[in-house]
Length: 146
Image (cartoon, rainbow, N blue to C red; front, top):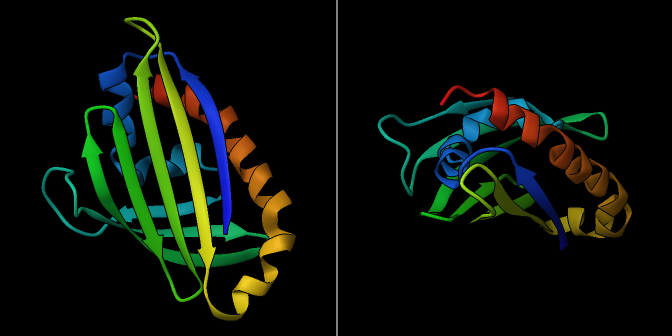
């Protein structure tokens, strides 16, 4: 398994940060690996809401079906699944001030079958993606209308 963690300061209030990030469709705005992400179900975002995500990694396109597993006032957990990987994105939020939120973003990738053999060779590429998320997310959340 590969687990990555980044601590990111977001220049918005906590409720705005959670509201922005709970809609996984917005990964197109802040995740450099995401090519497309579309909501599959309808209604308000809630635990059980689903998205279909298309990402590009190491020159290949991959698709995962994501589900919001946990939606708490200061914590979100998404799980994405396909035939080779289970990806878990956990986001923990804390108010630093009225206008600044601290986000601890943890992404874990558990590979299945033969894909497990590649795990040791993929860490550097995943670290680079996590750095891209940390770089892009503050601007993306700021540009989102409140």
